[in-house]
Image (cartoon, rainbow, N blue to C red):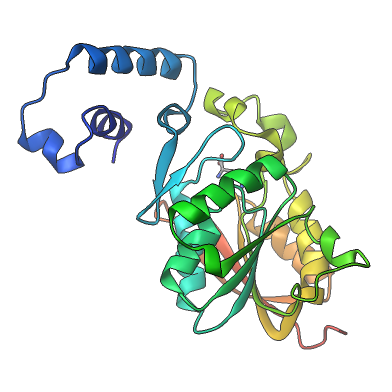
Length: 268
Ligand code: GLN
């Protein structure tokens, strides 16, 4: 749906097709909502934050400034994981944000168990609302953690670790680009976007450690940003943890998802 269609179908509380098949006129309340929304949009506030929700993978998620707005490209990540997943797999979602990846996977894999991590307690509280809203409670366990730090604590929960699949859409925008890109980005949590000076900090950290928490044949699925494939390949080949199995492009032809398999040579 275009932004206009999303806005008008929210104001009239109707489907996209009804917008075109019926005549609509604004009552006073709807006119007020429309002009308030247009004002906030003119300031750069993303439409999804104004409306308070977004559709992702056919499901509806609550969103606000505690979390990154789920992007359509991330549906490719979910779709790619779904293609190689089956049955009672154990998965880890790093940097879950709104919970959109974990919830979408759980809706299509009713037996999956997902541990969903985020460093932000505010994001986790919103993700929990999204899990309840989409009735995925029994599949998802939320844990507050800066990447793998919770696994290293002495009191580590035995349930954590030994995953079939680790997934992440980490922050990957270069720090210096955040203010220069669209003004909408300034409204989203910096920590969900900022991937450090070259945008690759989280790939370095995840690729260095993820092997420790995967089963032998386990796989790592990462969303990547425009033009990052080559640099990430270098990070992978400099370590000894992973072999790149496949790279999937999004609908704009941009390399968007990297699938890596744990390297047999990996020591533990
Ligand atoms: N895809 C987002 C953007 O381009 C970035 C999301 C991320 O850093 N993971 O704005």
